[in-house]
Image (cartoon, rainbow, N blue to C red):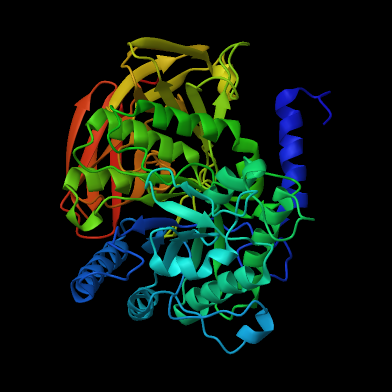
Length: 583
């Protein structure tokens, strides 16, 4: 590595190089997930599954159908528009399949149609077409390199598992679930064929669109402690053994007729072994659940996000991980989680029961979608702060009209405005003061800027050179919008979307001849606010609104318009002003 440009630039160059050389399936001819196409967010249905099949299948099927109908109706109404995938199940291991017998030679297995559990397959085959009909996609979490120790049929496949030096079966316990698993010997052709046929069954027979491949058992096993395991082909190192498994998965999905994305979970960025072009860089464990008991989890999520940001950016397809927004999580904790999701970019996994959420919590999710097309960047506040050894406090997300994939509704006014969305975090156990220079986020320190607090719907004032936030609550996150101050009525912020004008406002402009402010925005689920900043010499005199009812509140210098009872997906607003002086 060449450190002549400094550690940060050198690491970015290294990330670009390692991505170019090590991303598995990077061929442009591949029909799998190798292209850097943003991954849509997912909803985890949290169906009760087991390796003995689905219990009370008919009840679960009815429950799944209700949930599919709910998310479909939400998307048709213009809400939760980033949710592209529905996760139908999470499988902690491969199926041992006690009704199947395998020969040591793969060529003798050609006529064997290996399937997953019959009830699981039946559910997937019945459910996935319904998802596709409604424009949704199906995802599945899968750990293909291991077998459940508790599954009786695993005993028939013991000769396919890794052992210790004395040829005794070795097992390990999966974090979180506590399940005991044995690891498949990926150097054995029969084990590879077992994995290949089950993947093909899930992809081609069940039409699964996205497979989250959890490789944690192998990472914690032979990669971490190779001295505790032995495998059939002694010429392979543990890294080569692991790489053999990854290459098997990529070649398998390439051979499938149905197109599928591969997303690696807990997969290390290792140059010698390679990694998937899709990647989830944190655990799938929820980061919003019981936030005040396990605060370290969300801090660690932020730490990992900062530490591996250049690598995740170079890969393109990244998922923050699972979040929960619904009660009983406290509001302050939910805002912390939502702020992290907002600035991370990429996609998220929703672990809440969306069809049973409280309206105010569902509205918080509305404010997150669509997510940004790119992540925020860490702002180093002093020489002692770096993203590798500290928990970053300030994150900057510049926003312009290209930051979100807007859908055009009617005539779009041209605007070249740019502004900044800031994620501010106090990771301390006490109230703290956070201060930084405007130049740190790329702004002109000699100019005046307007600052708005998103979650508190509060105008914080006009700043120049530096911004200081007093009394930031412990273990909290704040989402700020900073705009250049103008000498005409201007959009300050909205509470419709975290970008505060990026994805929620379709067009905005000022008609100088008529002294009229014009705005077109998406309709809120229940109520929504638009905040305007007015110079001293402008007075609102006439308002017209199409698509919703409205009320207003003028408290200098902020003019707030509240929309409610929307009749359309899009609201058009015009406000005429009179000028009391020449300025």
